[in-house]
Image 1: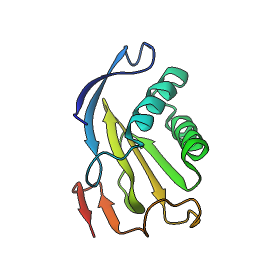
Image 2 (image 1 turned 90 degrees about the horizontal axis):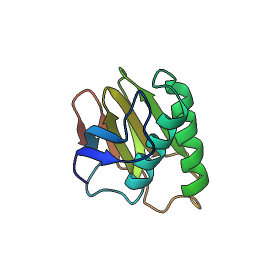
Image 3 (image 1 turned 45 degrees about the vertical axis):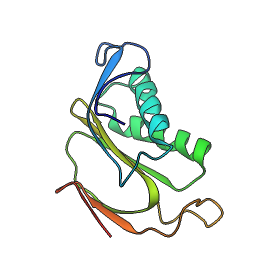
Length: 132
């Protein structure tokens, strides 16, 4: 999935019809959930002001849990660092303008809910690297 303009959602003052994705990161190939993440981010930005990061994160997390099963975590903001353990193939980080969205399925998901092996990657936003 290329970084750049993405037509999602409906226009708002803060975000016009075309969202410009400035950064998009995942461990290897795009997970099947990447499109859902971008669509839900657009929907959240239609519903909430960009300054309501907690409400945006709550919306995306609850929808991901509903659609893809429990165990998803979502962090939204303009300035944060993280070091997370996630299930293989269940990680996406992207920016819409200056707003960063980190979405991942943590290791706390039950075995029934996990479609992937045990967590094997760590991602640091400080240096944008994945570490096995």
